[in-house]
Picture 1: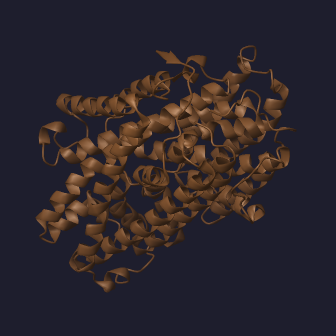
Picture 2: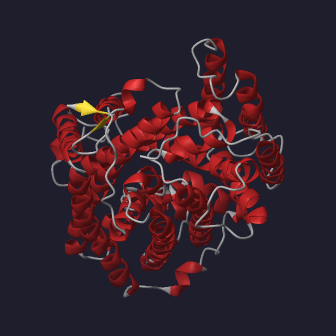
Length: 521
């Protein structure tokens, strides 16, 4: 029987850290190394460090929000508190797209790797699934749905086990590949053959930012965490720092272990020579056993991440519904298990849907990355707004130096979205502007009992302006645009736009924080 029950505080620091690490270590590390190398050369090491710094800054901001307001689906509800329901609606839409499609992309990645052993799972010469391959994906989705349907603790225990398994292989890869390390690889073709533009592009196009984006599941289960004020910040920071160290070591190990003769044509063609980087390099070096382990991990690792987002996405849907801009049925929580089951059913349905029109990993990666960054990017403005309209809110984790960290983290987020390129930016941000118009058209059906529609629009105009200006900059810029504004001036232009938008958003927050109807679970 589904009732308006409460979430159970069952998750420990260990559970939460593994949720963060497990969400970060999905399919990203398995694909990114060769893509980063072909876009940035050895300087791609800097791309990993910049990506890690960006996510760490955003993570610290989330620490303040998550510790002060440990709410299920917090990523959706925080902007409602600071800027009104319209903001929560816009963020809910983009986050639902990002999270539900991310479940699918991880399951698809696991199937593509499994096809190395079972060729009948993929179509010849393609990453697209056969009918049997699609049915295997469906069975995996059903399995993770069942894990999350009955118990949060069952989910946590299964995730901890998977996380331990999937970290052993990348650590082993690092140790083994460093035994083949050739320092000359880092400079024989130039350390940065594609300049700073290559370093920037690799963050988005190389799969780096996708590989890092695993913070929001921690926030999404905040109301189910034991001692959240202490646990959430520690788990967030640990997850990002540990993953950055591992990612950088993996990239360096890959760069240094490539046979020198394979670099004679430069770095641009490396992604073709090593389409599955660590499996292919293991075979090249004559280590079939390591290739076997990499493929094994490539099946387990993405599956584990898919399981995490099958757990986190219903909490996001719940948060969106609690904000009053999505169907009320999704606020229901099963009284016995503490699971938001209607939201879980919707997550399951959407995850199946995304495997239909977008059958391969490559077709989803760009959109998922940009959508996830957009969902993260709002956090600094939200935190700044709450400091203005809820100054007395208890903040067990208070970010020092926020006057610098807030705008810097927003600028970096904006740049990452911009670097994803015109083809992604144009339709994704354009769709967000369309959803804003839809909200206005249905003004008689939107919640206005706590915040007037006029105030909601006033407090959200900065976001619409941000979307519009980034679309224009992307069209005129050098990342897939017409190059009317060349590099690095396009990057500088976007940074200036983001800085102005940040202060606009911070200063047009609600006069008073909107906590109406926000009973803590």
